Image (cartoon, rainbow, N blue to C red; front, side):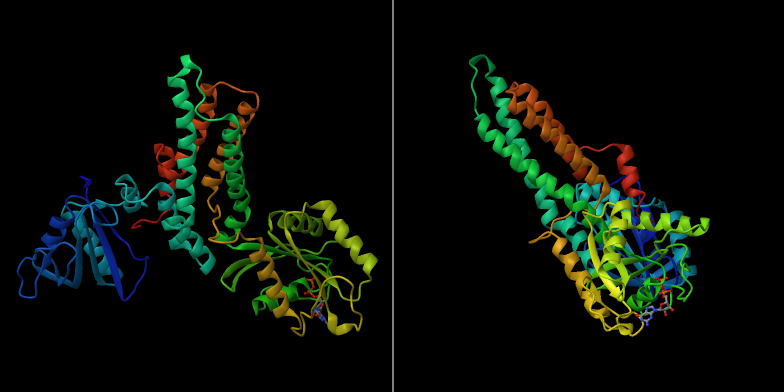
Length: 452
Ligand code: GDP
């Protein structure tokens, strides 16, 4: 469907560039662009579908800029509407001037995400794919890019479709029984249905479980560096980042707040968080820092527990248990490190020997972190939940399937079982957008920038 209102926006980032691209979408896209385009000898230009035209952009006949225009006729465009993209020179003045001219000729400024919303409304993309477009635009590491592409066109999209098909098949079997309810027919053996529900629940549970890692991969995996004061946490952060970001000082307790820095290693984006040292302190400010350190641990996926290489094993174990007492670290990747190995000939029992000062063992530490993270990622096509909205919906699907399972256990009538199955299908539909409300759409698309 070609939208009646024609919208326009600058689709390249705000600022000066070699070129900038303005986009028009809607039934008037072609005519609005043609009003402003002229050939080199001043004649009007007729745009042709999927053809590039070089020409002049004019304001009441006066030359504004040399431009290139491409016309995509509906429905074969990103939005499904008629679309024209105009590439002009990247001056801020020229961009704004042309945008104003497009509005004067009958287009209006697009809202954030409106191009992608039209693509969704015109069935070019489903909702989860539209969200993947935003993730793709935001992606800052190869892993985040891979996840966005999987959601856009890969394994994730087909998993959702597969799940939907299985739920529909099951619901259809049960509904068929309703049509023949007088005859008390059972089209699906209850044992078979139970097996199916268990299989589906296992798959959904796997997706739910993958969210913690999927979300971390998308936003940068939080890594908390934790340990006693003065063990070299700030020095470690600095050397990991090859930078002097954290203050290194021989005084215990200098890092009183948390410091966060991002870096990409081997295609994975990490958010390293240096924390205040863990010790019993009477200093209120330091205690607040320690509380924050525990909070950082709670929110981290990876914990680098740093201790001094010269510390004896019993004391080390006590410190580690202290951390366990304050935080639940069971589902986290914990990398134990013994720093200042340059100062001791001791070979500590536990932990990777490093020297943050001399750079010894730092590459091995990086490799250890990356390989432990990769081990925690799913195999194969690596389907993971990365979106909190999908995560919430999947949890609801899981509890609906749980109800079906309970119903089957107590031999509940088919019509009651189908209610729960329909619920599961409903929540799945909210992910792909087959069921959606104004509220959901506006919250999804408001995340986009204008022009996307
Ligand atoms: P934090 O309190 O745990 O953040 O520790 P800092 O990074 O501030 O370091 C405390 C002191 O230990 C500083 O004087 C550092 O120079 C020193 N230090 C850190 N790492 C090493 C190391 O591997 N070897 C040696 N010899 N000194 C280190």
